Amino acid sequence: MDRFTKPFIRQEPIPEAAIDAAVAVLRSGALHRYGADPSQAALLEEEFAALTGAPHALAVASGGYAMGCALRALGVGPGDPVLTNGWTLAPVPGAIAAVGARPVLVEVTEDLVIDLDDLAAKADRATVLMLSHMRGHIVDMGRLMEICDRHGIAVVEDCAHTMGAHWDGTPSGRFGRIGCYSTQTYKHVNSGEGGLIVTDDADLAARMILLSGSYMLYARHGTAPDDAVFARHRGQMPNVSGRMDELRAAILRPQLADLPRQVDRWNALYRVLEDGFRNRPGLRVIDRPAAEGFVGSSIQAIAADPARVPVFTAACAARGVEWKWFGAPAAQGFTSAHRHWEYVASQSLPRSDAVLAGLLDMRVPLTFDADDCALIARIVGEEAHRHLA
Ligand SMILES: *Cc1c(COP(=O)(O)O)cnc(C)c1O
Image (cartoon, rainbow, N blue to C red; front, side, top):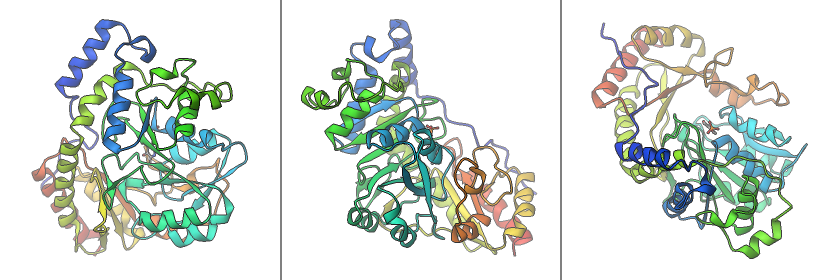
């Protein structure tokens, strides 16, 4: 039996242009954004704003920081309820908990997007929605915004898995009041840790820049609003340091320029896996809506019989193919489910639990090529016939 031998967590090297830029920053000694002229962080903000079509962008220390900063800027505080996806990763409820707020979990559908009927049913429970585009699945954003606008809900988008993606031509992160992105190693650009925020709203931009730890140096940001806007918020916002440094900004700029090409590469690999997983016994792939311009940096499949998952995933693993399972009894690695977040009040999500029980998840690193994905697909198909049929 053939075996797959490449690791699922190996990233591509940082591009040479980014390495050169990093070395130049190191040689200058100016690693802090306010000590550098020109500032790589400020240039990154200008470039990310241009890429997403947002008037304001802010570079920060992590995606989790970006989400917490967004919530704080919107005035979310201790005890406030915040709607969010019942299926996402731990930094999302974590960011809500970080400001002392309470996650109100919304069900996930069988197509792995937030359940809009459940959202509408819970819409009067909170004034903010932290919408996680979990694993790159984008919900019908027209319908979602219509529900949220009708109920006066401010939307923050968690785009950790959708940098470079769009819904019906509008970039992910540009529907809500604030869009948050991660530049952590396992996302779409890699600075080890890091985050980016975009918004249309000058007041929110000023509040988030002040929050991120700008002291009185906020005018040095790449896309800062006018002084008059800062005058409304100066002194009101605590300095919760979470700035991005020059080194990370320097290595992100060339990667951002390369993002469209990377997206094409991811999607080509995704299509090979998707074709291979489709029509296998006991396994369902997620049909992607035509309006969704996704980034296939991971792929999901749902096993019809969750009881058979452990044997199936063990058989795949024995041949070098790694699945993560959201139905596992205990949280493992990066994978956890809402019942593992003990700091969140336990909530009944029967529809989500039924989906998560069989939900399998696979990362697609760009160190794989089309032949690798064809081999993975063959192994998954054979083991599905053996163990899921
Ligand atoms: C990675 C991730 C984040 C933020 O991550 P950081 O590691 O803090 O940059 C947010 N949401 C989701 C769904 C993620 O996977």
